[in-house]
Length: 321
Image (tube, rainbow, N blue to C red; front, side, top):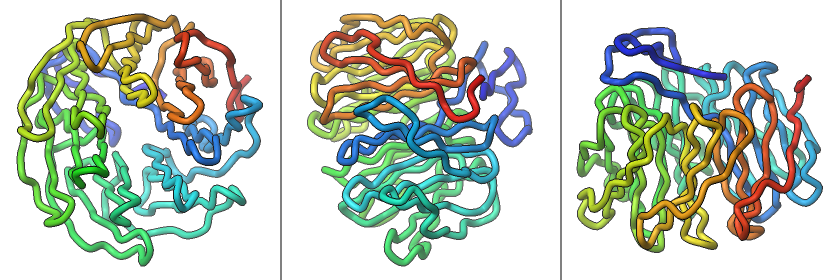
């Protein structure tokens, strides 16, 4: 599940090569939470499946076929639909009640890389490795707009309060800002050498961007698209997640088995959690105050109590030894 880069020619998800200024990077693992149903969805490439975890029992309650090389998962908790983008040209729609594939949406040629939804607007956003972003109507499944973002997008988040969409691309490198009403790119923000992960706080309109080259986390003001702070962490960040219950931002660092905890008010490091293995993906349940961490080599997910920032459970995924 690891996509790592050497100093001059990092391998991309499609096997092609593009020079970037970085020593290493790790692509985030597909992981998402439905806080309404208290279900956690995590993709595995070996085997090629989606494990459905029950947040009460901390156990796998269903296993879904994920298609070829699942790259992204997004959850619409209002409709209880789960969207899965894989290495092919289809977006799978899973019914969260029955844990079955309800429909599929045809995508343009090119492997889907990142995925996000805005349930309030009824829009799904899918970007491929070439930087083509499709805007899809959630009800009809039809493409309503196509636009260009940076090359090799690796993370995408939506602010439902402003309707803006943010796409981090390591091939550019840049943060593309899209207006959800006009479906147009309204800004391209320079964010370090190798933007690799995003988190967003809709309450404060702050966007957090992890730099895979330096380990820094940039803080962007969503109203001005300007960087207002930078937190120096070092290491190799692999994923970010915001905990709305505490305002904390969790930064997974794949080279140290550590998860740094940032305070969103002060932009200071206030804690650290030892994940016990390289963390690849992060997701938060804002209702139960639980943080879920997908680990690279152990084929499992650890559960962190957001009140104490301690691990309270470990869940083996489907097909784990």
